[in-house]
Structures are given as C-alpha cells and as structure tokens.
Image (cartoon, rainbow, N blue to C red; front, top):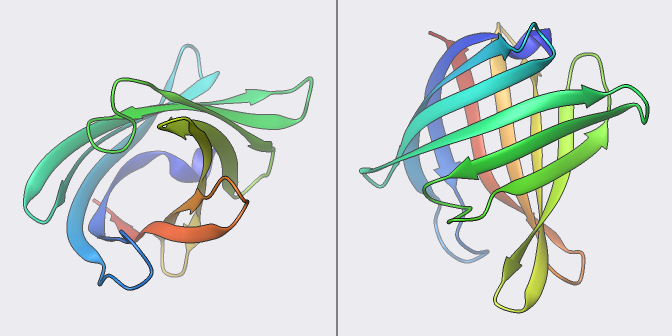
Length: 145
C-alpha cells in the first residue's frame, strides 16, 4: 500500500444514477502510515456541488487470509455507520468490497485505488445493488500535492 502514501488532490465525479449527469467536486486526501506501519490511514476533505464533507478510512493487511482490509466512514456516504471492507491483497493496487444497508436491503460498495499514468492516483468507487449489478459511483484522478 506504499503507493498510496502522501498528499493527493484532484477533481471528482459523483454519479447519482444512470440518467443523471455526474456531480463535480474536489478532494484533498492524505495517506500516512500509523501504528508502527501496520496500517495506512486516509483522511480527506472534499466538496460535492460546493458542499463540504470529510471522511476517514483505515487500510490494513490480514496476512493470514492474504486480504486487504478497510474501515471507512464519512459525512456523506456512510452516515452514522462505518463500512467494513475486504479484498485480495495486491502489491500495486487496492480493491476492497463492503456491505451497507439502505432501508432493509443490503447493498455493496467497492473501492478501487491504483497508481495512474504520470504519478497520479486513480480512485473509483462502485455501488452494488442487492441483485449484484455494479455502477460507477465516484471517480477521480488525483495528483500528488
């Protein structure tokens, strides 16, 4: 997860539905090692249509199961509940899946982070319906700040 470390910033697109134009925003994010390098902490501040929101995620590695782990909470998507994620452990990418509730239905959320061209960080989040259909929810290409 070392590819994440540092401060990044950029523009984001948030997709609220298939026939709705994306909402534009900005994000400033910092990834740093915590607890003797066992975890990576992500803290960010962002805007969506001019409205501010903040968030935090803790990424880790479960060596026993060869999985990446994450615990995400923010002031826009997760409400008062945090989402727990797991995914395959990879050297130069991070893709983790979590579950959350919308009413009585359980939905999925996938976070993908990977290095992009020219020292950028590609950020993509996907919403997953209870039926398993995925749709792009958030997209951004971030540059080192």
